[in-house]
Image 1: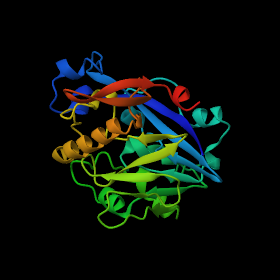
Image 2: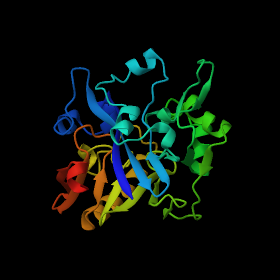
Image 3: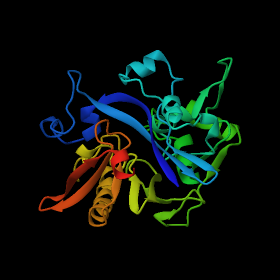
Image 4: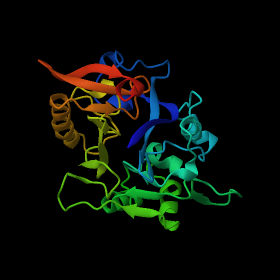
Length: 287
């Protein structure tokens, strides 16, 4: 198995929304806001080469939305999936599997693109199987009013229409299971959105965890620092507490999807609870 960090692009989000009830005077220390109160956000994906499988975890926003849509997110930098794949000698047509932690637009928008004539949509990875869960798929395709703006039909329905959609088998009631021969385990969490999947990967003697929106940035480590986007913040708290304590005690390496300035972090136990220990570059940890 070989892992590659894939940079799908950078954008900005409102700092207040990203930190919920936490005052700006506190979160601004770790995630400084610009004059519009926006903070830097990454769309950092992960590519897993495992035998004849080439598995991409999440795909970022993509580029098919309108200029007006993207104007809300202040895109910056020149990263994109194609450039990042090319860096490692791959093309999107090489991808055999796209694993989606959840179906919010900033995690799965890059999975679907305009067709050649811009008359409709098609998978951006024509040879890949798209992986979700039946529970989360039902949640996303019949969205509640709170999340409706994050579950965009054009990002989701073409996966099913193409015949490329598959569901991860999950033992009833289990909060952790193996991901159908993809080579990693999955933790299921429900605070941010229903049945978000958090991949746990054993790699070169270390445990690497793809954090998705359970821990969007290093600045979100203190327990009350919960996003305003979470649908069940009081459920996020115990999910996050249990995970962070385990991650600190077992020295997990946390791969941060949304932290533009911290690629991988480790944690430590302190008198104030679990806190950020060290920041690592992927190449330093897994060279």
